[in-house]
Image 1 (spheres, rainbow, N blue to C red):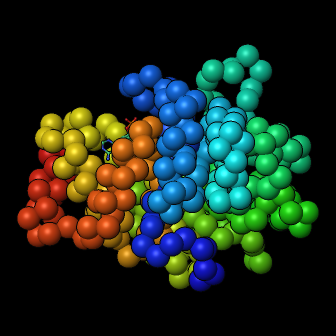
Image 2 (cartoon, helix red, strand yellow):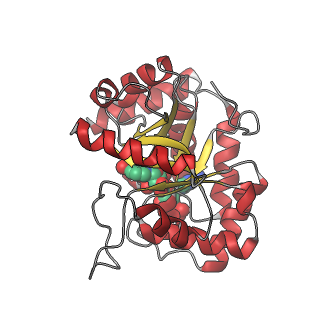
Length: 270
Ligand SMILES: NC(=O)c1ccc[n+]([C@@H]2O[C@H](COP(=O)([O-])OP(=O)(O)OC[C@H]3O[C@@H](n4cnc5c(N)ncnc54)[C@H](OP(=O)(O)O)[C@@H]3O)[C@@H](O)[C@H]2O)c1
């Protein structure tokens, strides 16, 4: 597998939902807080910065411009676009078309996207067209690597020969382990695996009803310790979460006592 240049041991990536209000209970982080958050990530070796919705691209673009650290970041972009009359909404994805890349680059205020994510499509012909487009953008230097997001196992079987995919991304956490088989297969195909949503949008941190710091620690360590996982995207609005999550990840796999505590939470949820 190619060396992705991350400092050894840092599997964490920053989620794009960190910048927007729509997927959280709290008010969004201010611009100054967003700058501090991204700087804290880059300072500590978290270089992979995800953006899913177009609002997140605009936010991250502004932040990276302000702090002047675009070259240190590995930016991810997905095919979710602004739609007329829906500027404040989180709209569904749209298959990539040729004009989309320049829109994304403008929003991100950059000349290239490190990891372009194609939202999985059940129609193999649409996916093949998108992969070909992504490849053409790679040829002109606008895209470096290409991932398949919200992927399921069957999508890997439908890939065209000689595809240029390098990553698969899917929700994967202690409560939703379905992507385990996808990640096994992806690894066998020499693809990088990216687990998303360690806390299920943060809902599990409240729902479990115990000390949220301990719950976060255990849920994150479970996913980080999975051998099939290369990266874990976690949404964080506060720089203190960056340090707490890095410390958790560095503590290593769960002890038998922690594993049985987690098993109790999972059993209660099912
Ligand atoms: N879930 C999906 O289906 C999906 C799809 C596409 C992309 N993604 C990517 O995956 C990322 C993460 O997924 P997610 O949005 O489901 O969220 P998540 O990472 O499972 O949970 C995020 C929540 O956890 C809280 N948090 C983070 N660290 C914490 C800590 N140490 N202690 C206590 N609370 C902590 C954050 O709180 P604060 O708000 O206080 O910071 C935030 O509300 C997204 O941002 C996005 O980039 C996910």
